[in-house]
Length: 520
Image 1 (cartoon, rainbow, N blue to C red):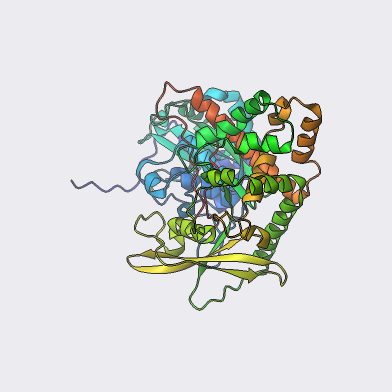
Image 2 (cartoon, helix red, strand yellow):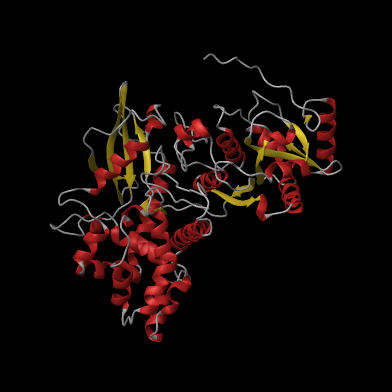
């Protein structure tokens, strides 16, 4: 059945006031004079129209990330690094977003995955006065922006749930400026802030939860360089619960006598599919024909920093304890990382990358591509001294193929950690060491023997770690705590259906080879 075409909609006014109308212009001038339009100028510089009818969340976030000058750390097109809707597939496949949109919780997750600092509030967790306070705060600065999730029907507009950034505030009229990313439908418009609150204080039919708003700003530090937590696999909830709830109970109930006992209690009882829970962060580049992979100084510097951090990880005492334990407990190692006898981990990284690297060949979101050609591994010198492992793979679809190079920080010692026996994952010792360091400090309080407790606390303390490694650990710890909140929300709402499902797939398209953390 044919669908009639539409050219825009008439903005219902009242309650909204068209930004470009004489009244809207006057509100703008007055708000500028009162200092509550500072965030507007950065946002308007990167204002965009959503490219798909259901991409309002992605367009709003891309606009805010670019306004905050957050470097995506991966290429968009040509040599340019830039946030585009097509790159924001961290928490939901683009095909699914295109069909059904994205939920509030997953957009929060996506903002975090993209390297932003996010504070999110559902309407049930806040008040209209709190909301006004945050809108005023972000409107008087250019380093913080508000994205609102609201129901259009409250404004007599057609449609249902929608996301858009808030561009400013008029104190005298108590009105907020909505920079509607569906510009093909409605122009930017002013609305009474109390009415916007009512529009947010509605229930999202898909999740059964209230809508809300989120504050997005730049992180004080860079996100993780080496490791990140993942919720790709369905068992993520049980794994998160194991680390934040079960491990402290196990340590309290067991009569552990030394560090080996402590590691045995934790690592011998790891849940199934633990392998998918913590992953490497790697860098991926499109391989041009006859290109000898000439890296920029910036890229070389970033890879060198990764190598330095991995070296720092391998030099701490906890890493040695983990290595000694796993070297002596081969059966435990097999349980943690179940792979076939001759399977090599590095080519598998390239294969994983190919599954999500469609953007590199212009086929992002398509299910018609796969990695079907052999991968290979070689070492690439980034600074004349330290080699970086380069894994090559190929994205293939019906119309052509695209080579992809994946740069993996690794150490020669760990590449052969299992000798001629069953294959061991590259960096398994460092990976597990990072996760143990990321556990909350209270995890260890159940250890009965005081001397052992003090020894463990000394091993896992972040205070004496090098700054680079300390930031990595604190980032992982923050991810684990957010996962704990997600588990608690799930546990508290078992009677409802389709609640906060926060599965954050990898930013495989250019930057990540595996899957990044699911949060909020």
